[in-house]
Image 1 (cartoon, helix red, strand yellow):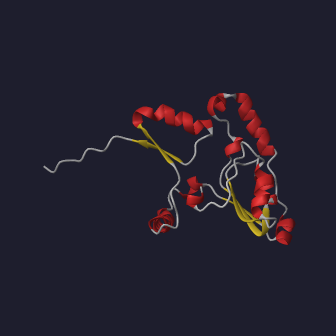
Image 2: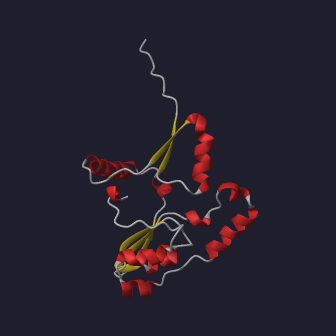
Amino acid sequence: CRDYGVDFVIDKSSTSLWTEAKKAAGGQGFAAIFDANGVSTLSDSYDALGQCGRLVVYGFHSNLPKGSDLLSPLKWAQMAVGMFQMPSFDAMNMTLENKAVMGFNLSFFADEHAIFAAYLGQINDWILGGKLKLAKVSVFEMEQVAEAHKLIQSGNSVGKIVIRTAATPKKSKA
């Protein structure tokens, strides 16, 4: 991971995420935390911010049923309970600590072509300039779509999953 510019890697399946994160922050807290998990991490994410820190919430991965639980009414009921346990953040406390909580949902940007073009152009420049390295991409052929779907629903995928479709035949000029 150091090849990607990462200073610390925390495997939360084998160690305490927040104990290790506090060690990594050196007691200063973090300038920014990007949280895609949801209810299970939001409070701790906020607590781990330093002065002027920003918590950016962009998903609720830990709230949603996964795999075989996707069709379980019990898991969906548990998700609803989780929504009621969603932390709230005190505006006065945020002001005193100079912290902020922000959120966004990419699906609302579907028609924002100019914004995406600008952002993707910047990201492309960073990649070409060696400032940003690409993480793992798992490529599956169309015949393996069930395997790819199983991987993403497992919650254990790392990086991006791509399904390669057949090449579009070129139209002949008649």
